[in-house]
Length: 618
Image 1 (cartoon, rainbow, N blue to C red):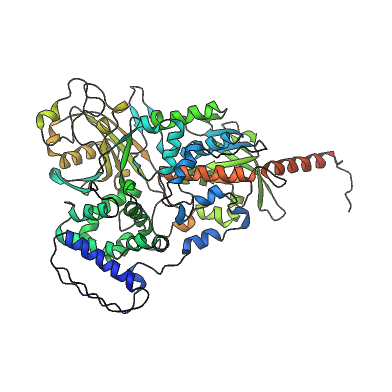
Image 2 (image 1 turned 90 degrees about the vertical axis):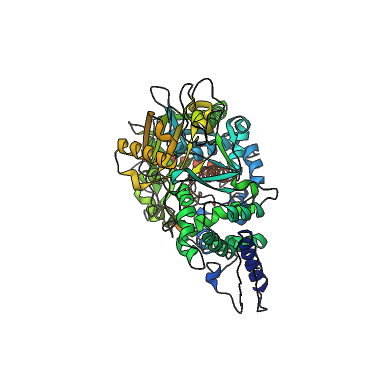
């Protein structure tokens, strides 16, 4: 009973018909009865969010950097732009390695042993280079790090979930042999837990894949009221996502150009309701970037939706069998050590040694000073594979004369507090009280009670949470114990004391799972990270730097650097692969990185041979 009437014959007519038809389909699935007349004489740019161009505003800015900072490698170029967005072939590239050994052997210093730094080191070692990593912390992993306390409890910096579109990261895990053994596949459903134990879901389990599986998931979700479902359908039906279904480049360009408005502004300007934002989109926004829809960039949110709409597997979740250290990092460390890569933990970079030209502009990096004694280590190339606060501390002041480096200081970060709370029963088991209290025997390998998946909530201060004793039981389940809830609090709770945060976590869990009030907390941990992900507020995307820089032998890596997967594990992996490709492409030849080192050394020797009293003439 949904009536659509169309008028107009200009070039947007077909597109508008598709939009309206999609909205009608969604509304029809929702069971709504309505009459809708859409008179189209011209299309305003706000219907999609902005005018579409083949090259987005950010891409134009991204490509307008100095020539010295441009990519020269085909591999790095393949990781940027619309063609790379959902390119499954990138998994094979990550799995197989660079496929090339350089003629020249470079000495390469990598500052930072997070995912980006370790992935870059893998490729560079396979290409025949001598690589050494320097990590300030006593362990590797960066924002994905974990460690054990004195009692053997595994503690993490955050809750880590692996989406099905993490093609590069999965390729790395296949390369190190951890993909099949260290990841646990979850049901294709995103569950929301509301106050009083009421559940809502985006259930993508459907015989037909994307985009139909996504349409029916949003239409049938219990998380929204019928009115909100309708407004949700209308807004998504007029989004760049719909255009991308038949014009992917056009849709993606429009998404990239939506970085100057918040998701709430975009969502409500053409039909989206506040109820949809409060009950569904805010929990998702907090899970993505630890900020709500009133503050997160529309580009960020729509990038994720684009993934889910185009590829069925993109919204499939996996979680590690155990801790990140054991399941993700240890296999990478073994891979690196087999290839002679040295990893120095507890040895951060204190200074980047570099040369200046006659105008005081940095021209070349010669090495780094590391450790408490400022030990000078010289390298042919240096990679700064750090997070935002790390790179801000390390970059010399002179580097900020380049706009690319100065822009990094305009990026802000959000604080988070990761809480782990263990109980003497199964918190998320709401259907059977006896089962909730039963912790007897061996309940390893995910046999514990409750929900085995990532969880969201609109009624708690933690953006997302999970029972690790069920989802990742390899190292988080303890015999004779129950749930180990891991929840990530955003900046709303960051300033509170650790004890208060634990208490708030327990109280909010009791509100979501009323039966859990009968359980007792047996252990807890709080890890505060004052600067975690870069803040995905509007206008930030243009400040993210490329991996190649105006200084020919100095490179950047890290999830904050420019790529489409935002500040994520996949983003970090992509940046590491891009850096490696770029260094490998620049290593050989008369103007290569090794030749530059030799020329620099020769120049230095000539200067040393000239007596201080000699007169140099033409």
